[in-house]
Amino acid sequence: MIQIDLHSHTRCSRDAFTSMNQLDGFFRRNPSFVLAITDHDEIKGAHEAKKLFDRNIIVGEEIKSSEGEIVGLFLKKFVEPGMTAEKTVEEIRRQDGLIMVPHPFKRTGNLDSPIRQEILFENTDFFDIVEVFNARNRTYGANEKARRFADANGKPVAVGSDAHAIYELGATFAMLKSWDGRKESLIAQLHTASLSCQSIHFIPRLITKVMREIKKMNS
Image (tube, rainbow, N blue to C red; front, side, top):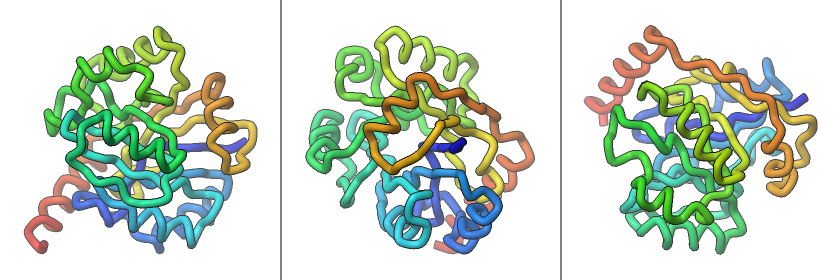
């Protein structure tokens, strides 16, 4: 069986810390794990990880559109932030990628992070996958609401650790029967995948917050 987490970050994200050496250790301990590297408005870390870990990595990006965040998966090159959601989706499609809507009902943290509700409900065809559990999401009922939205619209579901540090990885994933690296196979299996969902607890979250402030001061 394959464990797959479609939302994670490396130190190439402005607020994250996972290094390639740490990922190497993680995959040695978890050889059947697949990660989508979805750094904020950045793709260098995903490309570097793909070269090092090959089939364990999906190249992605968490793109800050002018109407909220959108995750592109199976990308070939960087997608510019700041475009409308429609233009962002068009660019991902141009690269033959998949589009996932992350934490669509999140209401804590950065309030401009979730996709705008009118975009979500009026343009359901934009999205191939709905993230129905985000391990960092602290908005009460948000994950459950995302699952209801996905089910109502017949969308495949995914879960994401949204890990910003190595110790946040490994507990949240979907279980696949096999992995051949193709997006078509992923979509087909996500419809029926079993899900492991574990929120990031207070102490790891606090450590990450402190590390984030230190990184900000040193930048």
